[in-house]
Image (tube, rainbow over all chains, first blue to last red; front, side, top):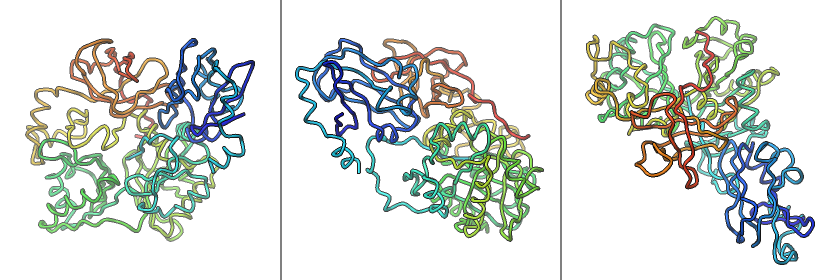
Length: 119
Length: 392
């Protein structure tokens, strides 16, 4: 699993990149009450704001970590936003992307580097 | 009374300087309870504790929550008699202060010459003096305002800085407090009383800012940690931060100063005319005589052009402060703005308050709120969103 400075995690699953948010991000957000996901088939560029996540405290955006196409989204977290707090690294993944080169995720932090990053 | 607040993006952690913030007397206690601290109105305040905003909110509605609101201003006014103070204060506040019975509290506000609201407050008749609680962000201005007008009339305005202010709120607040102070159970909504506990003099009012039954308790600083710990030792009580304070007051339909009311809103637009008793209205024995009375009386007579309303967005997306409101899904001029909004844990969905042009203020009216560039349906709703649970 790899981690971005925007507190997203990435892992590879059957030639796709699965993206979610870290436990740190989930804890900072507080109770999540609303999630809006992109449409399957959307072409995205790294840095595009493609997910809206609202907690009891505030609205935040989640950006695409890489260029690519959204191939699947996790509607379970739209129906039950609280899953983002309960299991951010597992059940509450956000979307899957098709990217040109799976090796691109190697540029992101590994777990140790991310732990250091969040201090 | 009082503030909670919505906060900036929680993803941007560590961006706030705490160096300029004053610390509460209960700071160490909050830290021991895993409080997340944020700056608010010049104080380092707990925004949430270990349980988190949602659980704290629901706990307060079901059992009892303890809030530290020591940032708020506590003020005592002394003069020749209660009546003398009350009548002088009525020149600043459009409320029947002279007719307030001893041992009773009342909601009010300072107005400006334009009929706007300088601050909202609670004031109590304590026999020979007035005790007042005002908003933290306004307290310096409020005190200066009162001193300028009242001191030449021989009224002393004293800010109380050696006392903490706690609120115990929720359906089990009475049982919890009465275990320490049996007399608390005899108080009715908006009663005030002085009681002694372990040698400390406590100033109680049966009121709050959650829509639930409960108490606000002014306690000497040196006794505050022990008193707070004694309340928290009761398993029915959880510490509650500003986050849940904000969602509780929003569901209760209560205004947050600086958001739902300010110098640009009149009490008539804000639907707070209930707080202006008949005796202070045209035809009453002490009508007018406060700043902006002409504007407020004309607005009561003609009807305001905009009104504060409750709002229920369709779906699950919260609509927060600043969201623009429209009469139609496409086109047309803006008809209003949301002034407070978020997720209501007890309601189980998004709730908001805002101002809309008078023709759209009727409960049930369907309007639209623009969220991230898209207009989404909103229904004008009656306030409060959750029924008040006061011990009348």
